[in-house]
Every structure is written in C-alpha cells, then in structure tokens.
Image 1 (cartoon, rainbow, N blue to C red):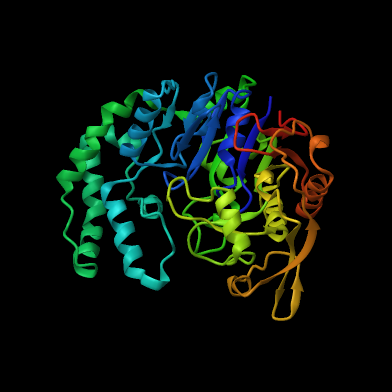
Image 2 (tube, rainbow, N blue to C red; image 1 turned 45 degrees about the vertical axis):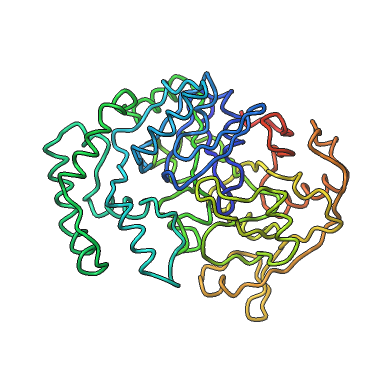
Length: 427
C-alpha cells in the first residue's frame, strides 16, 4: 500500500486540510511532519467547520491515527486547547500520537519572536509571532527543549538555564525587556507533562512498522513550497521544510518508502505575510477573490494577498517536490469572470523568463506575463464528474495541468467534504 506526501504547491493556504481529510477515510495514519501552530487548515464536514492549527487533519477521520512527527514544533498549551475544543464537539482524539523528539515552543521562544519582529520594523518578515522560528533556531543551535525532556526535571532545568543564559542577555540589553525566570518556565512546562503523556510515542518506529505492515500512511505538510526555508522565497519563508524531502526527515522514513507526492494548487494564488508576489492584485478583482474565496488566514486572522494563477510557481513546485499529482482547489471561486488571466512567464529587465529565477532580486522585480482564458458563469458546486463542468471550466483545468507539469487528479468545486471531483484515485 502507498505512502503519500501531500503538500502545498504555492505559498500555503491552498486547501490542504480538505485534501487530507478527503483521503483520511482511506488511510491508516496521517502524519504532520513540519511546522507548528503557524499553519492552519479549515475542514468542513457536513454543516460543521473545523479550524485546525497544530493537529493533523486526519484527526477528524474515525479510523485514522493522527501523528505529530519529530519535525514539528509543539506549543503544549495550543495542543491541549485544540484537543479540548474537539473533544467538546464530540471528536475522539484519543488515538493521537506525539513524537517524543518533537521540539517544544517555550514561552521565551514566543517572547523572542514578537520582540524581534517588532524590532525589525519595515524589515520584518511577517511571522505569526508564535515562536516558531526561535524554536527551530534553538533546535539547530542544540539548545532546544524536546517533548521527552518534560519527563526528566533535572535535564529540563539544565536546558532551560542554558537557553536563557543568552536570551535574557538579548532581551534585557538589546530589547530593553525584563529577564525571564528559569524556574517559572520550568514550572509551566512541567505542568503540561502529565496532560500530554498519554500521546507521547516513538513515532518513527510506529510509522515504519505501519508501512512494513502495508498500512497506508499520508504525510501532511503544514505550509507551501514557496515558504520552504531552502527552496522558498527566502527570507520571507517559514523555518522548516514543507517540501517533500521534509517528510522524510520530519517523520523518520526513508525516501524509498514514498510512492506518490501530491501538490495542492489553488485555482488562483494567495499569500500571507511579506515577500514578493508577482501576480498580486490591488484592484477590484483582487478584492473579489478575497471576498468570494473567504481569504482570511485560519491561524493568523490576516487577510490573504490575492492574485491570478501563477504557472511558473506551479512548475517549480513540480520540480522540487517530484510531484506525481495535483489537487486543484477552489475552482468554484472563479465562477463569474468572463476572462481569467493566467501567468505563464515573467518579464525581468526586458527578458521573458519561464522558470522561477534563483535570484531573489530578480524574483522581486518579476512582472507577470499573462495569457487570458475564457471564463464561465454556471454554478459548478454540484458537479460530480469532470464532464459535469462547463466546457470553459474544463479547458481552464486542462490548461493549468499542461502548464504545471503534473496531472490534476482531483478538483475542489466547493468547501464541503463531498464537493470534490475525483478524476483519478490517489490510492
């Protein structure tokens, strides 16, 4: 049975939650492999809407085991709050597994994130202020706190002291903030230990044993390809690897175990936070996409920047992830436009460029080169097959598929769980 990676092929917010949830009923495990509660998934089940931030979307599928892998950074208070909210709504969360090697977002990580971003002023990155970046920095600097450290008070005390030795110097001398007390942090973290203990497991072992037993495992990225720390629009990126390679390191599986890599594409393009965005619209079309598409960040609450579909980005995502399939979402949002522009290339200093420039400066100055496709006015939310779509909608999908370099195997035609056209099974 296959091991699948499902990830965003743009700047995130493409609708990964719906895609993961759609597959969740057919898979045995859904594994989050990177990011933290800076990600957000909205999943609609019947007349119920669920906003997930840290938990894998598969937690809403009764037969599925949701897993938070070692590559994720975890804010225990957010985790417990999210679990409590789902329990109150009758969702069984008891099967959740949490890697003991996942790193903890500490209170001082959140503080450093917020004051640093404020200090940068106009040069700010546009972080969510939730401590994600500083936690990954601690991980790389080998002063991070892992989930397993909560169960050895002596080690936890030593690690918090080591981390705050430097951070308190930064807070007091550079940012003019009050020093953070070691004992206060240790006490808060220990307060979470028993509450999350039932979920803590050796998830690397569990996942690999599941694959050996021919179970179906779905690896879920938290952000999009263009936010990848290595392959995104640096420095306006996240602090981890949401690209396909991140699934291997963030979950502890070898690349030979992965059978399919599915990229989620929105039928237009959005981005949250600072950074270059060639197809961004500042007119009534941009506002219409934002309004009709409900483009407000699930986690951040910020309005998303909106623009037309960018085929250059889609081709790049296909290449760096080795995509085998696309899941195209929110096609219904484009209903009503007589003509729909699609970015097929960039113009940079008078040159036509058809691939994503490796130079950040070039990308910052890239101007979109558009081709215009005829739109449609018919309601497509009730379509059950590709042939049910209006001819112009079919042609739009076919054009995007050809430009993007991988087959479109499913199409979202509405927000509901059942409002999806499956052209080719992912399993």
